[in-house]
Length: 309
Image 1 (cartoon, one colour):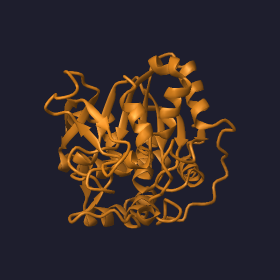
Image 2: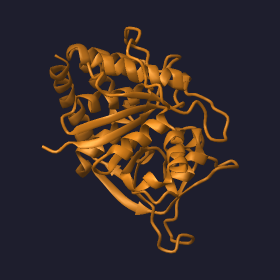
Image 3: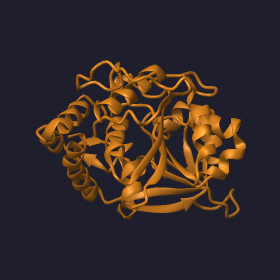
């Protein structure tokens, strides 16, 4: 079986942590690099959380690099009110021993891409600061990027303002660079992630499913992002999409990112083709089989336990 080569750019963060847990243990992925970025909490904490999970799953064969500590232009404000002070509360991880690379995330990504024998998928589940800097500093490597699979954005309303989703809002200038890059983009935003919920009962049930279940249930229980019928695992949807694209309904749009004013961080699709003259820049997920998501998630826990041993 051919594995898909992937760079994961993240800001764990609880839902990032769950997404990474699946990616670290899944046989279909060849994880080339993990990079941390400031977002849910500071970049020092997000990078430390990446390492905690790499050690938890005995995957210290995967390099980890620390990336941008702040957005390109906007003042940084974390989401510790949602994800806790550490970004990953709810489970007592040992202090990490494994060290991140000496080089920064942007140069580490450039090195991986330069040495790749085939284009690599970059999955970004935090602010897009690192990948925007990669595009700016290493424009000749754009052809080595197969696609961006992005958690972020929304066409139906935001979670940090009436229009803006957190990842885009955190660094809208970076998001604008990414959406204007010409790289193939799949946008997995709030339009689907707020439908893909784990019920409180499911979260409680997962706690009894071995060491991995205890860890995942612990961090999810500490997660303060709550909808009426459960908790959204936003970032997990990027990994699900790579494994089961058939669970999603996608539609191509020209998506614009708003970088100032009251709609800052908004992602606007030109649904009436008033401005884009037929141009399209993103495959946008607009619906998901929510029951299939929850069933798949539950089925993954025993596989992760078996992998960890």
